[in-house]
Figure 1 (cartoon, helix red, strand yellow):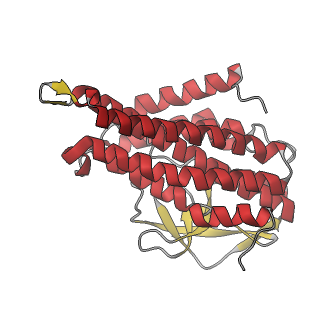
Figure 2 (cartoon, rainbow, N blue to C red):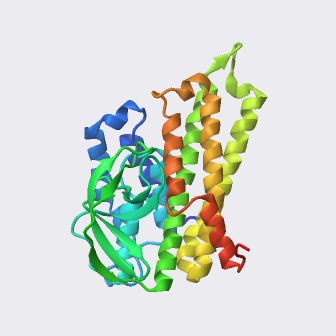
Length: 324
C-alpha cells in the first residue's frame, strides 16, 4: 500500500479540520449549545461525508475506507458531537446488500455493555429514525427510540423498538468486510480522540506554570507527552493499514488487520486520554474541562465492534489459534 495521502485526501482532511474548528465544541458548556450542534450537523450533511460509502449502482462505493477514516479521525479530533460512523456504516451496509439508500437518517445497531445498556442498541444515534442490524445472513431495520444517557457526551445511544423489517440478505464475505470497515472506522475515531487529547494537553503544558516555569519544561511531563504521541502515531499507522485493507485485501485478512488495529488502538487510547487528565492535574478532573470528554468518547469507540479481548480473539481465530 502507498501510505501517502493523495492531494484529494489531504484536501478532505483539511476541510474536516476547518469545519470542526469553526463549529466544534471547544468547551464542555458548548455541548449544550443546540444551535451550534445543528449548524455542525448541517455542515456535515452538506459535505456529503455520510454518503461516501454509497454507490449509484450498488457496486464499488464512491470513496475508500481510507477516505472515510480521514473524516472519522478529523471529527473525533475536535470531539464533534454529530453522528458520522453509524450513518456511514449503515449506508455501506445498504450498498452491500443492493438496497436503495435510506430516505431518513439511519445508524447501526450493535451490542455494547457501557453504562446502563447491556443489550442491542442504536449507536451514534443522533438524528436517526431507524437502525440497521446485521444478523447472520440477514439485514433488518428497527425503529430507534429515545436517546439514553451515555458515557460518551458527544454521541448518544438509543434503545430499539422490538418490531423489525427485513431489508436484504448479506453474503458471509460481505459481512466480514463490513465488520472490518466498522473496526477500522472506530480505530480512526480513537486516533482522532487521542490526537485531540494530545493537542489540548500540549497547549496546557505550555501555558501552565509552576515554580516559575511552564510545566512542559519538566522532564516528567515531557516523557508522558512523548509516550502519548508515540502511541497516537503508532495507532494512526496501524489504522491506516486497516482502512486500506477493508477494500484491498480478502475479507478474512481485512478483518484480521482491522482487529489487530482495534486491539492496539483501544489500549493506546485509554492510556493517552488518562495521561491527558494526569498532566492537567486538578483541573483535568473537573467537569468543566474537556479532558474527560476525550476519555468518554474513547470508551464508547473502544466498545463498538469489540474492544481489546474480542479483537485479539478475532486475530487468533484468523491464524487458526483457538481456546483450548
